[in-house]
Amino acid sequence: MLREKMFVEYPIATSLEQAVQWMKAGNQCWQEISDDWPECGGFDEVSDLYENFPDGIDETDNVHLVTKVSEEAPPFKVGDWVVALEELIYCCGQSVNDKIDRLTVNKVDGIRIDEDGGQRLFFADHADRYGPWDADHFVFNVCSD
Image (tube, rainbow, N blue to C red):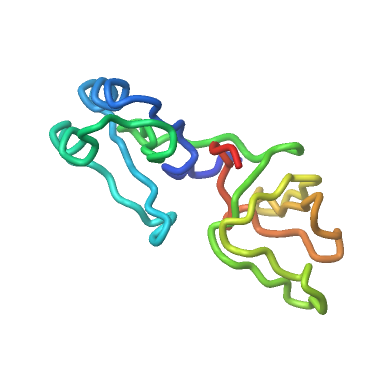
């Protein structure tokens, strides 16, 4: 079962020229804003890029190159690094490891498939007794830490 891909999983622009060409080709650019992540904004026109980035764009600006047509992403696999979209608390937990903080990067250590085809994830940094965690609460990590 494929999952919906979120804009934060798209690659980050390395230059203003790259972002401009991307938008001229009919695609979109979305920027992460830490206060609102992952609910961040896009740019309507190429002129918006020039206005917002008069000195250029680099990886630290977190401008994602998003395809115009929505696309489905493959399921997560063991070894992937994923980011939590929100704080997740394990229902029966009793220690500090019973939760995953928002924006925490986790390495997928195991996967269980539900009856409906959805993924439930186990993580290397969390004991199996604290999982599995619903994959819908995570996105693929495209940024280095």
